[in-house]
Length: 633
Ligand SMILES: Nc1nc2c(ncn2[C@@H]2O[C@H](COP(=O)(O)OP(=O)(O)OP(=O)(O)O)[C@@H](O)[C@H]2O)c(=O)[nH]1
Image 1 (cartoon, rainbow, N blue to C red):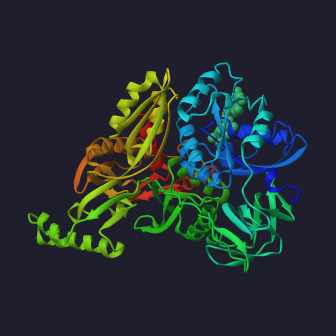
Image 2 (tube, rainbow, N blue to C red; image 1 turned 180 degrees about the vertical axis):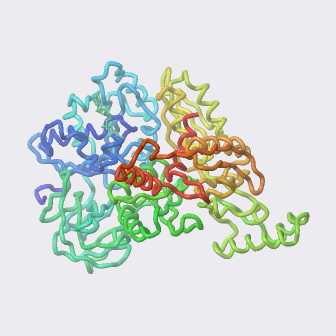
Image 3 (tube, rainbow, N blue to C red; image 1 turned 135 degrees about the vertical axis):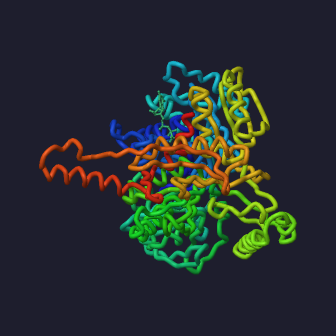
């Protein structure tokens, strides 16, 4: 590694909208530089996780070091492939901190999409060099000229700067590498300075502990050296350093400007803080600014199916959150579900992926409750509660006063954040409820504008901007209440635009809202997983829909089941599920006892996957299915 001085190093990311070809381009770059061989098996090699391969999406940024000779000079290129979906944009912004430039990939057929805009601005604000690349020019409907015009209009990048490529066929991909060398500046740092290493990502290995991805902003690092974490002040001895090609390859040393990994006996989750700065023992440096912590957009309760699994689930969660530090974890408990956690995710896809990883990588099945967004409540003063309660009983007045006081004591302030509908404070102890909002960007062919505007209005959104990015593509900006888009907005948008519209959003603070808590009762018993906080105007429709969906999802049982939606004591919707008996041994005539036993055993196994509410058995994934299926309407 010592033969690569800072001047011959380039650190860059590939950013793009979902499916525009980042991982395919990364494959070609790895092939051209001889990092991987050209075989069919090497498809999207940087998408290493099982979920990534199954879903065909990148969820975790991956680095790889490439060696490339250009005009007689050997270059070391560090590439980071990033996810495209909005839920994972935190991975993108973190990856950019280790880079001096980006390749912005745009599909020659689809053109600029919502995440192209969002990712462009991330790179632009980080003042990185941007190389625009138009991919998939081999497609029949490719129109690179139109895309070049869009790039020029929206991003102010001259159209001549765009490189037209086909990542799939390899056309012009070498030109991209040359442009990276010409246009992206080498990192500004020096090996003679004291060590300053940024931890920009980390993974957990069952055998070796924490593997930290580091970018060296100064100095050098080698096996055996003693290092200190600026965040925890703990001291470690370096066991291994190396580069990713894309698998770990140990090296003697890493030098300033280089990107690689480090193993230093960090065993605890909290030890490898992303954004931390590492320096040599007794040679402290000014820590790097680090990152803003990821802001969770959706919260859900997570409980073991069986409480005896609690400790196993706890350690699985600890390990997985190290590989995915954007998940927040708080301990929680519920009467029905026992001890568990309330987890914060960056979006619903993130929640699904996390759940799938728990199952696939840690063999853990869990109960997830309905996702909710973080609402806030401003608590009333005691005087106001008294005034509002004047028409109620004394007992009611004291109850409200105590609830208000309880929250004030617990949180020490007059404003509380509600991440669990079970904690929703009574209206009389609250002067105002607030809901989170996001600024959404929609890019769509213009023929769908009418339908999209109606959809947005239906979601209580307010239009902020509308811009034609070319003759037939429009970019719309809307301010949305977050809870209106979190579960199913994207699917609804896709289906009414035949898949052509794209969507991205960013945090836009809180606004006042008329919120209430809606409970779902099954045979009179509240289903904690389905309690939701909802806007008053939406409660009746949502309650009716949820009851209908539940009726379709809960298997019929030996007795009649009433499914109801309620606000406080008032029932606002009801469905009835008729009685039925499934006799699994009905088809077994005569005395083959082993066959009977087998069928009954299988039925018992099925029941293990059920969640009991009162005397009603409900499949444990029914709740998420019920919520997801709202999208089909
Ligand atoms: N025809 C054609 N198809 C391509 C080209 N590049 C990529 N694709 C296809 O486009 C699809 C998406 O490619 P990926 O490389 O997975 O896209 P990505 O941007 O990494 O996707 P995410 O990681 O989910 O954001 C795959 O089916 C690729 O085979 C190309 O140049 N031409």
